[in-house]
Length: 122
Image 1 (tube, rainbow, N blue to C red):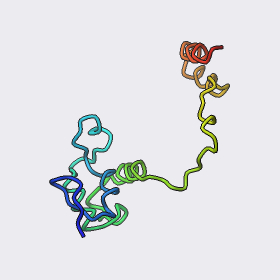
Image 2: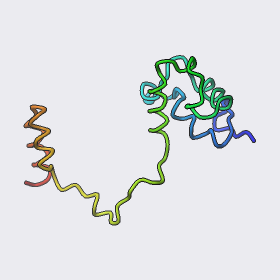
Image 3: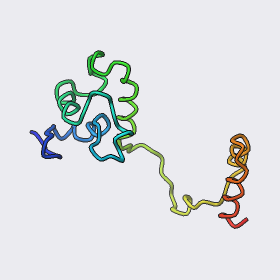
Image 4: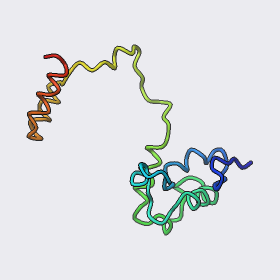
């Protein structure tokens, strides 16, 4: 069964989500993030239909961009095993931590720490 998620690209349903990580996005704001040189959306769909998972692509297809393609795949994959919080209050920002203060010091950015402390009401 073929499922069309774009008028010009048809891939099987199980490949639909996988394609987004490898395909060059046509929207300009995503272009630099998900671009594999020489592989556009149509080619990515064809490769996924032909070879399946990126890990099964012949080495000459991705060349030295294999690690980048695998990173895009990881970023585009929705995780169902990620630990979640029990209460939404857990997400409340309580101001910069001592680790952040150390990082700001290492980055020679004391103003950033001051701004964060001010935002936290300290």
